[in-house]
Image (cartoon, rainbow, N blue to C red; front, side, top):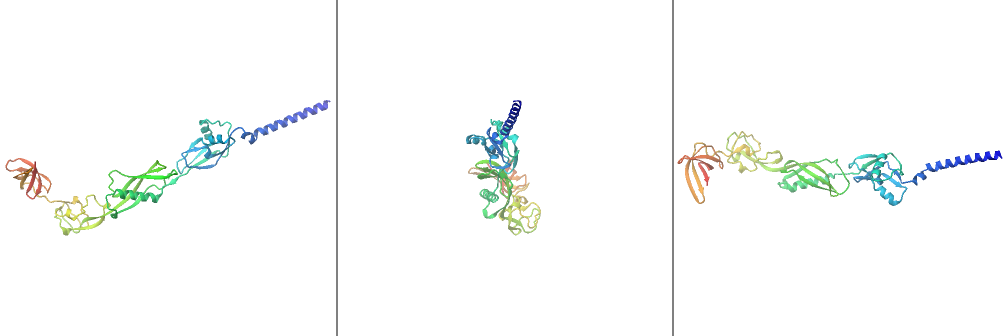
Amino acid sequence: MMTHAIQRRHTMRELGACLIFLLVVILLSPVAFSSDGPCLSLKAAVAVDRDMVRLSDIATLTGASKTQLKTLGATVVARSPKPGQTRFVGVHYIRIRLKQAGVDTMSMIFKGPQDVQITRQSATLPTRRIERAVERAIRSRMPWENENVTISGITFDETIHLPTGKLSYRLEPKRNEDYLGRTILALHLFVDGESVRKVWVSATISVMADVVTVIRPLGRHQPIQLADLAVERRDLKDLSSDTVSRVEDALGNRTMRMIYPNTVLQSSMIALPPLVKRGDIVKIVATAGPMTITATGMVKQQGRKGEMVRVMNTASNRVITARVTGAGAVEVNF
């Protein structure tokens, strides 16, 4: 009897040990974990094209109903990097974001890598399309004839990464742009109708036009004659804004300084000769509506045609201001 009792106790101990072992195996098995809550299988690397990263973008979700998995997958867990750039998001950070969204992460199983590499998809600027748009914008606004203009050197940052989507843009010139030489425009970029970037675009505008040049040396205060001048085709971007473009505008003037051959004539280089000088006796013509009065005066200062000079009325010794209208003549308007 004693022997049978001992054997039964031994058998019971073995049976208990087996049950404990089976319980441990069941508790530690993946099947047991999967029945407790959702399972997240994280991906090593993903590419996104939105501003925000959702859980479904970086993990495969199982272990719950379709409705639960859809809701869980829509949870935002990170902000996407800038277009064309990459960032890493770790399991610990994902848990924090899920908790902030009200998700119970204690029953969740995380599988896969500890960090997920997230790359933002991007689009680049269509270079030729932008260049054509810049040229059209310049030609539609410039004051020059199209056939006289060449636009070159259109440059901008071609390495810019933009969000994916429908690209549109708007070009704006600088205020008071003269559309000559180096020109800067602002390129406003839009993706799917939303403003995303402003880029500066530069271009060089060459305008060919007729200008007056000097063909032989002219001394200071020398009267300008037709034989002294020629008309040539030059690029205005290389010239001063006061360049003389018509021979008629130079004739009758005299030089203000020495001018050498092949010089492009500028209005600052020439001036009309004075028609009156200090001490000259002139005729004063005063006009008041239909009535005209004349008097004799003495000029107190040198003056060219159209300039205002001080003149003393010789009859009254009164000094007045009059406009030079010709040699020996000034005019006063009342």
